[in-house]
Length: 223
Ligand code: DX5
Ligand code: ZN
Image: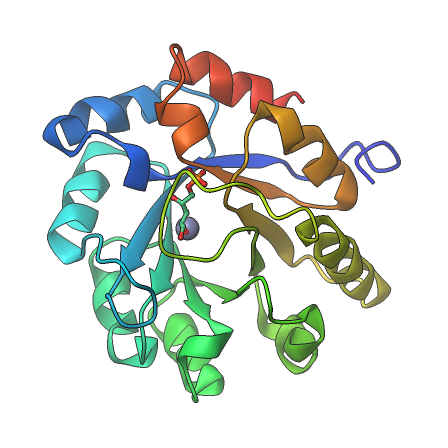
């Protein structure tokens, strides 16, 4: 797809979940100086996923350290309760999980009300077709390419077909909805993901585990 449409938007969104929390400011400065367009913030509640990450104070600290857009991925149940707070504390885009709420309409309305871009994510086992009724209200769809909950897992290859299917749905409707992919992404698969129609690649371990994280981001972007 990126062959046929070279203008298609490409963004790298490094996941701060893999940053060194003892040096959060330093690691945010690294991202600031890199070609990364956004910064990915993974919020986990220990209920929707079997892990707990961080919340508002960390989001605020990163907000103070960067001008880049904060791409906040909420892996929490009943996200509608917290959208206002995440928006106030610095999110530029909020993604909720389709599986985590009975009130997707309410979530999207709250995101619009508080001036953040709208995102919805689906787990590996959830088909992209469930998003059909909401697609024209979404700035972004996040396809999880690992089970949400932990960084450093292996990419699930079947995710590529989901990206292609979603790209067809979006293009058939002439929408601008971005496709983000998250989990197990590195220089090794970035090209395939962009070619399948992805716009935004999240990478945690591959960036922060690299000897030269800035160069790694650049390589992914130009894959
Ligand atoms: C996992 C998170 C991811 C994670 C990706 O639930 O949503 O954003 O940080 O980490 P890597 O790139 O290491 O797979
Ligand atoms: Zn994430």
